[in-house]
Length: 364
Image (cartoon, rainbow, N blue to C red; front, top):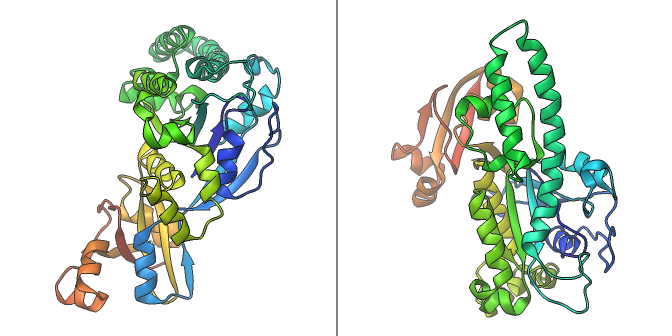
C-alpha cells in the first residue's frame, strides 16, 4: 500500500510524515521545504503477528509494510504547472490513497501560506487542482470516444456518461462524490482520476484541542462536513504529539499516550483507517522459518491470495489449509486445533478472511 501525504505548505505535513516514519524529512517554516517526495516505509502493527512469533519463535519476522510518500506542498495553479504543480500531480498519480493534512490550529509562530487558517479553503485549493487536472483528462477521452462513436454506436453511451461526469466536476465536485453505477465505475477505472482516489483528511489539531475538545474545534467541524459530503474519512490527529512519541520505546510510548487518555498512536489509527478505506485485510503464514502478514483486498479468493506469495502457488493451487487466528489462540497449538477439527481444507472458491492462518498446497 502506497499512501501520499499532501497538504498546503506549513500545515504540518512533513512534521507528521517525520513522526510516523522517522524518515528525517526536512521540515521548516517556509513554503516548498519538500520538493522531491520523501519516502518512508512503515511496518503495520499487528498484535496477532506478535503472538504467532511467541508461539513459533521464527527465524524471520515479516510484518506488512506501508509506503508513505511526503509530496511537495501545493499552491493554486498546480494543474497549469505553477509552483511544483506538475511534479505534485505526477507523484500523486502513483499512490493508492491520499492522506490530506489540513491545519486546524492557530499559531502566531507558524506562517500559513494564505495568511490565515481556513480548512475549507485549503481543502478546496487542493481538490480543485485535482479536479482541473481530471477535467483535462476527461476532455481528451470525450474527444477520443466521440470519434469512435462515429463508427460504432456503442460508444455513444460512454460519451454521454463522460460529459455528465465532466459537468459534475466543473461544478467543483470531486469525482469520488459522483454516484457511479457499477458499470460506470468499471468504465472510469480505465481513466484513473486524481479526484477519485480514496482520501483521508488528517485534521491536524493543537495538543490541547486534540486531547480535550476535538468536537468544539470549529475548523475540525468544517473538515468533517466536507468529508461527509463526498463520503470520505476524517482522522483527528496532532502532529506535535506524534512527533513527541516517535522516538519513544514501546512501554514509554504507551504510558505517555495513556496519560493523555489515548490507547493507540495516530499512526496506528491512520493505518486502520487506510485499510478500511481501501478494503484491505491480512492473512498470515506461520512456522519456524517465518511468521508473516500478507495484505490482500477483501473478497480475494484462495488461489489469488496464494499468488501473493508466489505465482507458482496460484498456478498450481490444490487447496488451502486454514485455521482462524482466534481458533489457534484458543487451542494453543496447531496440533490441538487439528484434533478439534478447526483446521479446514478449502478449495479454489474460498474467500479469504482477515486473520486466516494458511498453508497453501500446490503442484506445478
